[in-house]
Length: 271
Image (cartoon, rainbow, N blue to C red; front, side, top):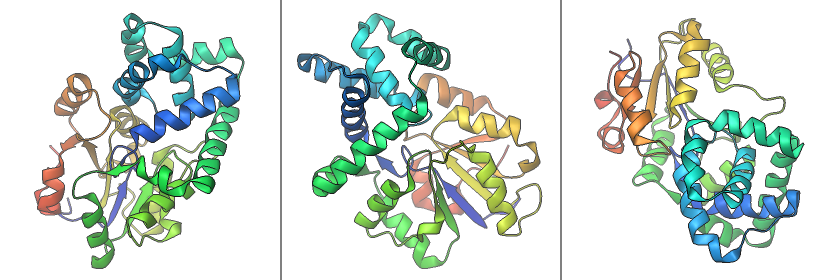
């Protein structure tokens, strides 16, 4: 196995950037715009805390609107079900409300576009890059390392945030949300081919904070058997579940910010 990545791929939310205040605010605004509902303002702090605690279950942006709606409908005693059965409960909610996920995604993007247009400094201020991340990304650019962002958020929002932090990544290296949906492993496979990596994906390193995404890649993209899969333990994870599962998994490696700071040679090798 190669000791350095030939192609490095990073998720954005939960790996590069923490935008929890923005996720909640944008989702709340989109919830009001698409469903015509406004949760009790007196519950805002409670709903935000519950939203943040359950955010690791969410795979893509439109689901955050569903999460806001379900939290407003339920008391905290129902949060465990949302954590343990998120996909099933989410799909039940979609069926009950008869709202297409694409419409929710469009509502979320519209809210963000309006916010960015009317108050860019305020929108940016709701985001915080993880400690040391901006300097590391700039170093990647300066070193000539080939790296990409692959995320389920619209690419233009990621580009705006990276420009804010003066990270000079090429726009073509940011893969955002696509309709119809493309799984992340499809994009990884494309990048491996583009850069002439072996069919097994050797030399491709992928950092993600959602354990289920990594497990899905392991199970459904078996041709990329030599790609390295890293779970970012500083991101949106359930520590008592996702980090434990990563420790037990034969291929997915847990990685911390100290590993990133120490350099690629210090990153855990596949077991």
